[in-house]
Length: 431
Image 1 (cartoon, helix red, strand yellow):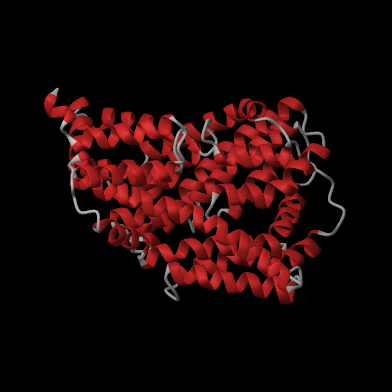
Image 2: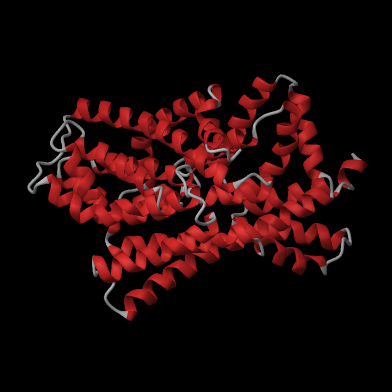
């Protein structure tokens, strides 16, 4: 026991878990645990500032603030509203039409936003009241938007993939390509679930009042958004980081000159203010989590954690099952970025040990974290949906259960069939 109490790795986990237990913000808990170990074990307090800076001074991470800014610009430009109009027109009056349109819109918006909570905020203001007005249960409407919006971190471009790629040195374009088919698989399972629920309750779509051609012409520039982003990346015109900057200017062009919804300097200042606040939250987590990861590696916590997992079983399938359970539970307690920095260093040696494809593992891990965005108590998508719908977390959580089950079934398919994740990167020669 004396050895254990002298082990900085033990105290690091104890301080971190203790801070979380008394409801210290996650970023602060990560940074504080690292600071305590560096101070007590005299590891060089002067290194913290250098490591803090190095944690964010990475070219791929520049894409994060740009994609966040682009998401707010797209929302203000009216692109989200026009995509919603198009999807609702396409499904028409069929059973579950509005719910299926909501799933389709949230999936499509993942190719614009890259953030689950931002997707709920951008689309929920229109979709949730619209579904409730058409006779849908408001809790079901809110849960449909919240759960499907989790796909924003799976459908490229994805902020989560940028962080994963930075930690594992995996190609971000390859991860973006790998996210396409898995995102559609998860969306398909959710779509089937909402269709069954809608059939049971008799929910329908709305009658189209304008010609489909007119609606499509109005939404053309909105639909072109992911084409510009992803076409440029895979066409070799620009990197994901450069694509994020291009998206910002494309959104401003559409909002100012095409749809003319961004009319004044105040509109721009409001967009920039929201983006700065959202970026600050993400980047403070990135820096503190990076610091935690560095100290954990230095004191041997990562090696000990990996060894502990390997000691549970040397059967890769049993261990993969345990890892998924751990990630699903972690998603209930931590945000996605923190999970990457806290847990991924333990997983990298396991990937090497069993020969797991890091691209496939990244997809599996990210789908886990997408599910975590709607599993309480730390369910960021549900918090946003509850705020928009004026419902309690408990009311929405109950309606989420069938959709979460559908998402877990989709995750199982992705685990059993790795080719779904690796097919496109191989086809595009990105892996």
